[in-house]
Length: 374
Image (cartoon, rainbow, N blue to C red; front, side, top):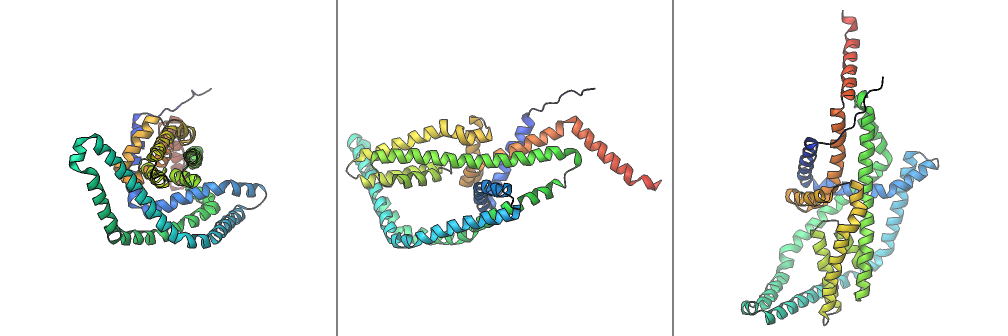
């Protein structure tokens, strides 16, 4: 006798639990940034090195041996690159400080010039002396910046540097012992739910892997588009600027604003007498953002998480409201993983055959334990 096929569909209760759990996790993660940030960096390193480890395992190496070899190779490449670049970084350190000040002054000159032009067109702004007040306040901020913020900034960098060193350490043990941890968790699952649990682990791993791979692909697309546009405008170091701006875009909205500001500062400094270049850089950035939202993101991150665009935008705002900038960064991967967990738990709880198997197994265990008591 064939039993009727059961097909699960997520309902409003499951989605309410998914969204509520996502908000709660974002709030908790905000309090544990010292661990969350290194763990996220470790996940990026893990998914970058995972294909190499799998190739070595297929070649005949053990899991531990492959993890050791891949980790040592990655450490050697990174350490060698850093050693080669250190003399150049040391010689350029003073120049970078002077360049940063020059770019800041170029950006201030561009803004002051734009305000002067607005004052010529609008009498209200001229009466309020907007440009003069802006220049005065910025000058005061620059004079007091070192005294107010430089010490706390240096302390923050010093406090976060050891924590970021946890990332390669965590990634190494994920490569070596990730399967052991997964088996440890699976042993605690009742036999009736074993298949669903295996499916859950596979889907969570797939969701996280596709998200980070999609994020890296999105970063490459953004960097190439920005670099091509900046090269066409004649801005200096277009590839470096495009890459830095694309990485900053990992922080939704806030990172985009910082990236646009950086591009405008460089463009305004390179062409102080041609403000049209800075305006062109702003237009380029807006075009790339539109391509990002409507073309690149659905092709990469959105496709991996299978989220509706409206839900994606709303959850980004919710993540920012619940946990600030960390919430903006974490909301999409957390939502993707919690969505898989919620749907899998919903499948288990609402499947009458699975629940019947579980209850029957418990009854058999009770009978076996108490058989010799009578």
